[in-house]
Length: 449
Image 1 (tube, one colour):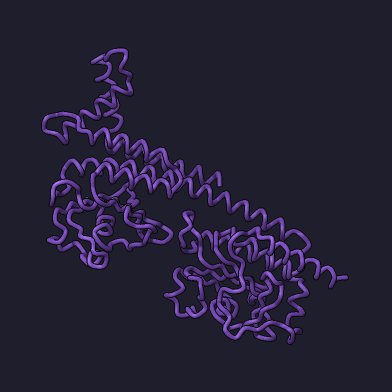
Image 2: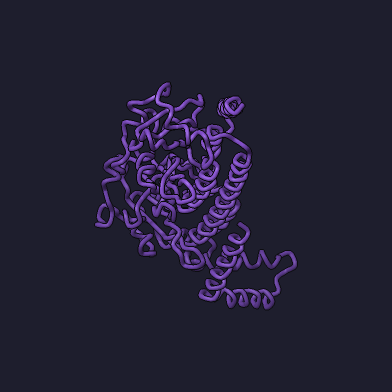
């Protein structure tokens, strides 16, 4: 993790150096210092205050014919200060929207942040309780993201680019719109910030002052978003390392197969921040999947070809699904009081040949840092495949695998078993799960005796 952090810092420093060179930052700073030394302001005006005054005056000259410093310039500095003080992703986005509303004096602010894992723009807006996802290229903001160019529309209904369907669905009328791309120091597009309906006189649109203010704010937003992403990545890495350590501690103990499966189902979700986890053993002789990783510790049997876990076991392949309802293999009838979206099923391959599957680890609904449902990415795949290798080694000598086919009676069967049940969900330290695990350990010790 330290190497990754060092690499990120190096890339960021290179991007900053390139940006400074491109925009003449060094020359600009030399000019400021030269002006300060030439004017020699009074002792009560510090260099920092002198530079801030110069910047405010310069901005005022650009946006005001009289050369007076507008209040909006002071608001820009205040907004920047508040935005840069946040680092938690959700709070950072909230403050960006709040401060942009005040700065632009508009009815709504929409912040579109590009999620590389989803390859989608995630829309957070002042009028939305929950974020929604937009494809790059969709709508005005999507086009701004694709082109990297600002768009300022005085009358949206007279502009062919504007899609009126959103207004018709909500009953809202969008009149004026200003959308500006959010770009980092290296020139990479991070998202779009969009202001809607300038307040004030009827029919008033966003002017040059608004363009300058939002453009400057977008530069600060890019830094704030990157800081929030670094923070998110650090937290996720820390949680994953802790969960992996706990898993290794459990797996190095002399547990029987049943206790091992319960431990995996109970703790493996923390590795990838999944909402639910199911572990199936494969009974090749009976052609069934056996799930004993549940709170009761009882076996539940399914046809080996059943659902996504069945395909994973039968075809010995990894399955990753971003949206279950868009995948023909998923049965929507299995969702009762629950919404399955993202799924990953990892085969536990029987060593040493690894040409057959002895178990399946299935996770459901990836939980993003802000508790939104995301998708399982390549890092999740690598972690779960590594876990599957350890589990396979532990199961290799298991008597449970050897004897699984001998049990033909006395097991629970399901005619319409939901695909994600039985599973572990919620807190990974549930006393009920701990009791079930201890019960399994005791039963296995009694069998060994």
